Length: 489
Ligand code: GLU
Image (cartoon, rainbow, N blue to C red; front, side, top):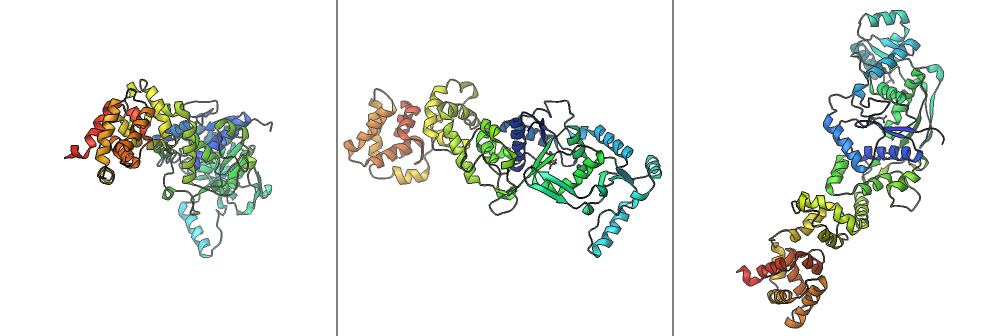
């Protein structure tokens, strides 16, 4: 492809960035990066009642978190701005002037009541009803004069029937065609002068020089009307690419019913942005039959609309979780030690100022947990015992483990052995605790479990000997002593 590519992601800030929107953004971004073109972010905030600045802020934040940098748009600027539809009134007014001049739009003075009455009549005969073009036949000079004099009116597109059926060569779906005669002269500009979605979108895409419109196939039905607007403006029609939507496992379109759907909720749950990016990329696109894991460079290198599916894809939270676990393991000790810091600070376990001093210690902690967590939010609860001065032993473990015969004796011996160690390393601790069995005759498993519950507070924890080494001798001994059944009395 030699054409210079310009694509856009145009969310409406009526909610936060959700999974489906994020995937649309990713595909546009990857397409632009693959072709060395521009990725533009535009905020479609014409719905003034439902659009909020807060949603816009969230969308931008979620885009940045996913690493989807935009070349033009809010906070970045660009030559084709402004990038908020509410600030683009001048372009819609100009486009309307173009249509007035070329005659491809006309003012319509029919009252909403008159239109509703005709629609009702058609409905009772169960006929398709589009606007019946009453005002199309008003002589042009008269119509313009009435509009100018302030008579309430909307502006309608004059669909160019003579151009015939509307056909696109969708980059994903192939040829799609609509008969021109099912299209009515729909509204471009409302009585209050505001543009409709159909009009604003086309004017913006045109003025911004968008070459490819890549979006969900819920917009396919808008396409013929948008093409009618391009034709009216005598503007070049971009390439359309409509991808299949994302469905839940129940075959219904993904929604809140299927659990978390916003990108930020996944960030908060401890998904890594690179894992979510990888997973979302695969919802409707693939490199080949087998490749599941790839980084953003590979995504950019391989992205191709020809491999995007027009079938719905199924949201699979378990696969996402699995993938996140893989990515966490792939961070390595250094990466995980760094990435867990904000989670430990957030949980109140680590002081932001002291995080750097603890780096070596966190490096030792990383391998103990990397195999055990699938999300970053699981880390803090799993390692709280290493940070807290005192722990609370959960009742179930106390009853099941510490009350067992031999548990108390094991703890007594463990305390003596650990106190006597020269070097408080994982190896030395392991050797010491293994000898409890020889000394007391208590089964190794019972002894280990008793120590584990005493030291960590629960029967499930990261590897015991390493954990004890990280905890340090003083706190370990204090906990073992406190947990002895005799101490409880
Ligand atoms: N603002 C529209 C939406 O959020 C964008 C429509 C389009 O991609 O053409 O659905």
